Amino acid sequence: MHVKFPKAVDSSLRYLKLKFLPKTLFFRTMLLIFIPLIVVQVVSIVAFFNGNWSRMGRKLSENLTSDIATVIDYSQGNAKKLEQISSLTEKNMNLNATFYNNDEKHQFMHKATKNNKLITGFLEESLKERFPDYDTVVYMTDKREVLWILVDTPQGLYRFDTSSKNIFTSAVFGFVAWMVGTSLLLFLVAVMFLRIQVRSIADLAQFSEDFGKGIDIKDFKPYGSSEVRKAGLAFIKMKERIQRQISERTQMLAGVSHDLRTPLTRMRLQAEMMPKGQDRDDLMQDISEMEKMLDGYLDFVSGEAGEKSAFVDMNELILSILNKFRNKNVLIRYATNDQVSAIQGREQGLKRALTNIISNAFDYGTTVAVKLESNNHRMEITVDDDGPGIPEDKRDDVFKAFYRVEGSRNKETGGVGLGLSIAKDVISSHGGTITLADSDMGGLRVLISIPL
Image (cartoon, rainbow, N blue to C red; front, side, top):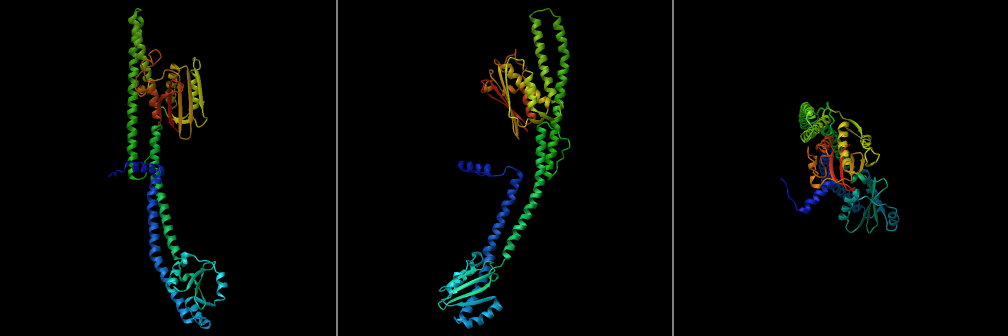
């Protein structure tokens, strides 16, 4: 069920999703585990503090307040009687009582230190409820093990010394530590198992990407969950079908091209023996065009037929292609950023694709600029010329086999219309893209992008 939100809300949600939601499956799954885990822990701790912790704290504080009230009521400001009562309370209740008259109490209160609300909060509330007419303060020593409870009465100041354990138990920290510890253990176990599952998906994705680049990995075996193994086996079968279809197509084109050369050779010999005239010239021209088409077929077949992938230095490859056109009366410009220039691919296929593109630039321009840029993720090759260019509405059609742009690409200088088609096929087989645009030089710009 898809819930439709207003356009403004939907755009805001989409922005938040793109901005803050993790991109990888591993971190998205960890988010699904981590957020409920944190929510459960927070709810459990809050429920514990609001329930058991508060009840226990108030009960202990009320008991201690009752003991203090009993001592005050029985002593009634009598120091000797307080001393007798204090000896009993210290022995049985761990509560020591001291009395200061009104002259002495100010010096003592000046030396006291402030308390900790987490430990003494319930006790302070209980003292205020029990002694609304008296000033009551709770202080702690530096080590926070002993409490000083001060009750200021008209007769004088009562000071009660007792252990902080009478109103506070450190077991709560053990409970919180146990909850956090078990949650961390569960989180670590989930991370370990999730990494194993995600690794199988990542390996399958890498295998698919390598196959798209023309890298044939023979020993890949799917592993992980049954769904991942099923997807991996399905991809392997698809890969085998694609390779079989490519092989059959290659063999068919190679056979057709080879078989057609024999009758074309006989036709050329017969045309040579014909008397000179217009018919002979037309026939020779048709035979030459058919031979060019067959050469294009064979070039396409040789680029697909079993060439293995290897590391190719694109900088050296481009320089070797440009050197072939040094004798032409064309200005050549080449620039590179001297970054990573080696990719894994089929060298002869890449050379054929770049040669087709660069030769087109030399055929139709007087100035050719080639630029190689790369980083850790992609490599981009830009070829600019100052020729007539290609109309924008025909730039998608020029990648079709045997398509020729009339007027700007004539038969005298053009080929059979397979150059850009072969180039796009080779670049796509390496996982890259090829696009056409207007050049700053006034002609055509060919932009090739290949992932590293």
